Image (cartoon, rainbow, N blue to C red; front, top):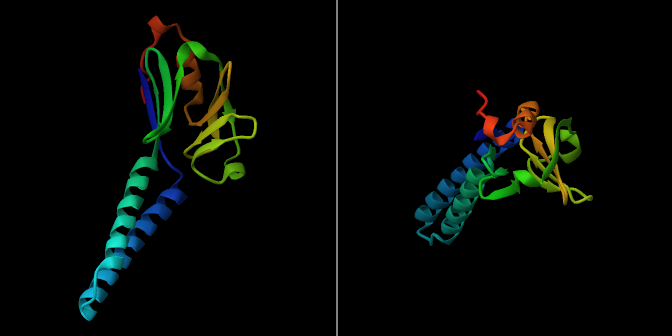
Length: 160
């Protein structure tokens, strides 16, 4: 089995943390203001729900995980995953992609039907099947391709 994980690009990670801290600050101000004037906590409850949703989204999307087991290659962020059977993979090669072209982290679908799983960097691996193409951003593209090209009996987990 092979497993690799990457945090999203540092600018998005820092932005998400700043937004989370800002939401906490807004919640504190709303609760303090509601206590001061003796009003209801409706806006504070709405902010608390928004904060909880933001925290769930952050925990779901801050890291991309690539795993290869005996039968499948799985890539994704939290609950959003793509699973490809190893027997369906027709080619695998390390590639360079333009992070500036996409300007985001996460899962993107291109016009040609291919998928890009982008966490950070401009290196990746291109996985082709009979039906689709998938580009995964990783700095370990050569390792993943060599791992996939080995016969199943000779696959050993590379040291990370």
